[in-house]
Length: 378
Ligand SMILES: Cc1ncc(COP(=O)(O)O)c(C=O)c1O
Picture 1 (cartoon, rainbow, N blue to C red):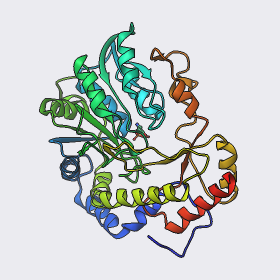
Picture 2: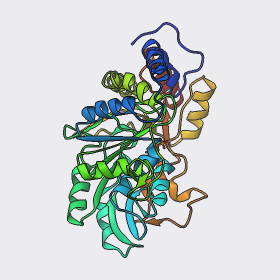
Picture 3: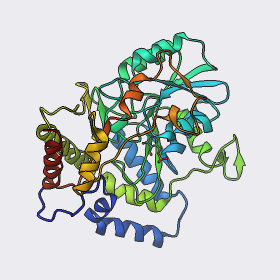
């Protein structure tokens, strides 16, 4: 991609550019819903669910209001709640842990691998040997930044201990592990359509993917008051429905997701080449995975000074995430952690930096970022 119009400030992400790239089709999709007269679930949501299930290669996709709800719905559909332990990571959006708690379960946080920032299987294994604050019920790895966690090792541990495997795919739409799409590996995959995600709505949205027919039926009931028949709650549910306007928009954007991911990978490859041989760590790629680069995260000792320098040069960056969940004021001190603590997580937080990346980012902007980083570190 090339453009002669470089923005004065390079944003870290730009969902508006994603809208403008498909403006006519998105506007037409919105008008179709408005004129159709059906504003809750209905055909638009069903059509998107079918298209997304097809994309992920699963039998069922059940759309909901956001990615946090997707995780809560997944846990509830598995019958996981009070008295149950769900293993996840602290190096994630707070949403992952918030959803576990909202389902009534107890989160136990295990450390991540230093190179990929995804759940370390040996840490999960060790945590399972310890006394736990409840019955071990599920493992919930986060495919952070767009790269799947070490799924085969995690699945093996989950199988050996009778745990559900629930994937947090909020950042990994279209990523692959051993040739299989993230979200199709475990019992359930949970996705967010927050506007900046690889597949982003123009508002909130989420979806749950599964091959299990009975889990899909449970998910459909729980997302709408537990209704099996209208107005008759067969179980306790919530209200978490995807808006049909967002479903129609997502239907348009799904068609370009593969191309958008390819462009993110090209941006990442350009950063890799341009930032080689500097005193910083580039993103590590798992050989058995396809990384879709929701974020391009470098690791550098003088992170804050580099960030200030980029900011002064008109380059926005992000930190995903500055405060691990177990250090958040609302959670600090009360979340159980794995036996070796969360040293890798804690050491990463002050050093990680997310560079600008989104499908419409021009090569010239990537080169400007590279030049500034090189000038700072050389
Ligand atoms: C890893 C992760 N999990 C869960 C979520 C929650 O998604 P949402 O913001 O749609 O509720 C997000 C996104 O913010 C996320 O990045």
